[in-house]
Image (cartoon, rainbow, N blue to C red):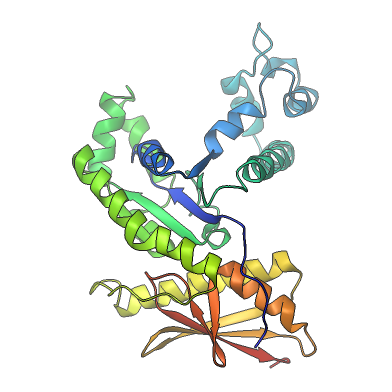
Length: 313
């Protein structure tokens, strides 16, 4: 078994939830416990501030009409032009996506010294990003409660609020895509207690185990978590994480998952002759520790094992 050193990079959490769910509140509670916060919405605003290259690129592409009198971005004018045709939308994305990705990478690098970093992304599920994180956290609030919040505290009319909600993923889709959910339909005290429990029972042990290269002592799964649909969804999340970690490491690996008595069993397939050190490094980075001929998860919240297979199938 390879002796690759345990990773020193932060435990990376993705944080999401529907509009009006209260992601910023949860982010603040996690920050109180020492986590660094990277806010996707804030970055999207930053990269189009006056003087930013992306704003100048938007002006060149769409014309001076996208600028207000003071030189700031006129978002309504941009939307009217950029979403007029698929081609115009593609032009917008070609400017915005690289700018946002570059700024996000810089923010993550600034937090690289911290033990835990949270990436707050409203459209995390919609954009298929859950595989980018060690854990994906859902701030869960029923649609009707979110509607009430949007129409009272944010001043949206009900039709507009419903339109924005329906443009996002459904609650069911988010639950299947994320590792755990925090109920924010109740009091602040209730939410604070949930965050504390999640941090103490799962996030901090996961971080500590991963850093030390120690398999986790599994927490008991709830009936829902142990159900067939939840197990399949968990397997899909774990496979996506492993494959994306392998891709970042330059290892052309593929993975598949199946249910097992001791959790999710994952077969990681790598080309024959792949450097074992590289495989060990990507597994440790993804949150696994060696035990005999398998790799066991360092996440106490979802029992899983990985077996490495060399060669094609």
